[in-house]
Image (cartoon, rainbow, N blue to C red; front, top):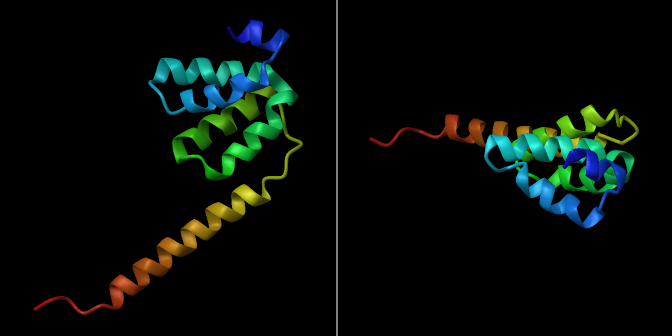
Length: 103
C-alpha cells in the first residue's frame, strides 16, 4: 500500500491515514509507512494536523516526517503549543499544592 501511495499520493487519503495513527499497532505502522511514502506532498497536511492531534498521533506524524526525510517545516507552532501545555500543567500543580487539605 505504501508503494502505491508513493507513486500517486491521494491527498484526501492523508486525513484518513492520520486517523489510523491512533488505531491498533498494525494499522498505525501501516499508516506511518504510507504517510512517509507520500513524501513532500503530505507535509503541509501533516504539520497542520500535528498541532491539534493527540500525543499518540503526534508521535506517529513526527515518525512519518522523520522516515520521509522531511525536515523543511517550522516546528515552532508545535513546540510552542507543547510548552504552553506544560506551563498550564505546572501552574495548575502549583495552585493545588498551595491549597490547604480538607480537615
